[in-house]
Amino acid sequence: MAPQLPPLDLHAHINPKTRPADLERLGAVVFAATRSLDEYESVRVRRDQVTIWGVGCHPGAAQAQQDFDETRFSSLLASTAFVSEIGLDGRSKVPDAEQERVFEAILSALQRTPRIASIHSSGASSRVLGALERTPIKGAVLHWWRGNEAETLRAIELDCWFSFNAAGMKYPADVSLIPLERILTETDHPSGDRTSTLPRQPGSVDDVERALAQIYNTDVQAVRRQVWANLAGLVDHADVPTLLPTAVQRMVAFARTGAET
Image (tube, rainbow, N blue to C red; front, side):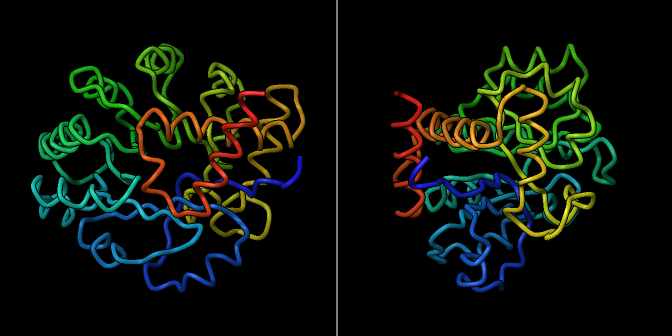
């Protein structure tokens, strides 16, 4: 395939002080998840070429949950195509009711202003799906998904996408329940790639691509093409192409053309 599309990482955590040039040297397109509105504010005016910064409110971050403001969040949506990291966490010290209040407010905002939304569901798969059933949104991506078979089928019915990292590849039978056309690659650096081959860094999804190729009985190049086609479909579904960096817009357009041929 020429030109070759780069690796795609739909969920990684990156120090906001990292220089754009250092991120470009990763040789990948990376969607960077923030854990709080304040963290996103610190990167909001950046104009990275191949990094998309998301506005987030991590369910495991007590201060972020406490400080969440729906009006502020809604205003920040105008500056990004990506929302991450949001959702529910069954192991968080934040009370369930507080997590659910924040998540419902975020979903309500996303109903009004769709975005690609990377959703955390650790220990709370069914509760996350319940929230998505009550307040359905476009562009929902279940990141590092570990739901059971019934929950996975329920998520597919809800029109969700799924992003997997190296840790998620330990469960190939679970992954195989999902159509490849609904899957994206991620690292969740520095947590989800602890078992990855070197280099352990955002954008390093080679081992995930190899594992997906084995699960779906195809080659790595086909997986890369399909993942980018999936991103193109996700971008169109959420209607956010013009909010992406120009270079990434070109890649998405190229992937879209390939998916149509």
